[in-house]
Length: 442
Image 1 (cartoon, rainbow, N blue to C red):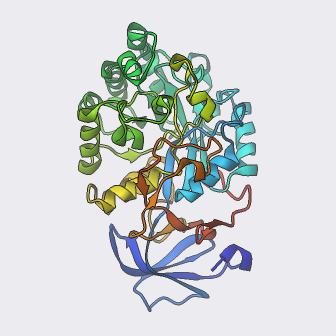
Image 2: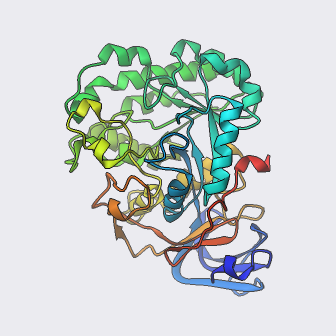
Image 3: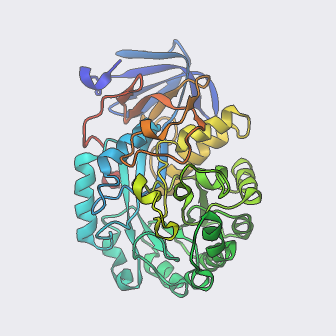
């Protein structure tokens, strides 16, 4: 069954079993050749050089995480493209999109080309790259678009120094118009953040320093600038009920995402180390979390994204809370936590696949996220009756911890990326650098 060892990638492989295809889970089969699905059919009808049947397990599209910080270059003690992509693979993710706030920041062609070379030499899953936009490089966006898959704008200060004032949002849309690249927004207004800035001693202080009005103000500015524009804007990590309400009036070219931690965790959650819960935007209270879960179910939220942002345990457990960096790991637990919500009856499987597979692929025009003819053979195999208790020390991010210790997830036992069997019975068989830049397909 270990296809890459036997050189079977160019042969016709048929997968039979309980498969999510055509919007539902059913007994079905599909065939792939050269990493691409070439035929769909019923069990027993398709012929191939290799026949795979995973028994009572289900076969689902592999996930796509559009929001990771793999920290390379410059912060590789926290993560790099190899460790981060291995974590993604174990989490059932076949493709990730890396954010630009590294050291140096990815704000020039040279920086992006250097980052791509690092990723191509290390990543075990496919990847895309964002270029960071600020006032100083808006005149170069056309050149940047040739080496990136999207743009990232920080409207409020977070990790790193990238920042663009809300007043320049319209200029960003004008600059990116016609380039067929989405703009991802960290939607917190810097002006409001400065107004509420204070010393912080705990997570409730952090929440008070970044109230929902910071998010709502930035969302409103982005939606107003996007109206009538040909550029797609994505609001990252919506965290508040008020933010989601504001997005109910958004134009059609604006989408939004939410993270597992904003849906499932809150500042009174009893973290073993309070710094584990320090993120931007902040963790909010039960009302907000409940509303975000409703948005996942109803379709108001388009994408489930991790905002994987690892820091070392000693940094997150620093004695002075005000000095604790913001961010938490999440790429490995993104899909498993979502499938656990499905198993618990809070979310349909169809909505889960839409959130973490299909919608992210459509956002970037990828032939991924579906088990359909013409799409990459990116898929995972999961035992839906075998939940795993999450233990951060046994996960694969270099940081070695998780805010979801003690939670349950449904993890893939097998993962295929472009038809190559990279995770086999929960054991990795991927070669460093086997991942591919998705920009090569444009």
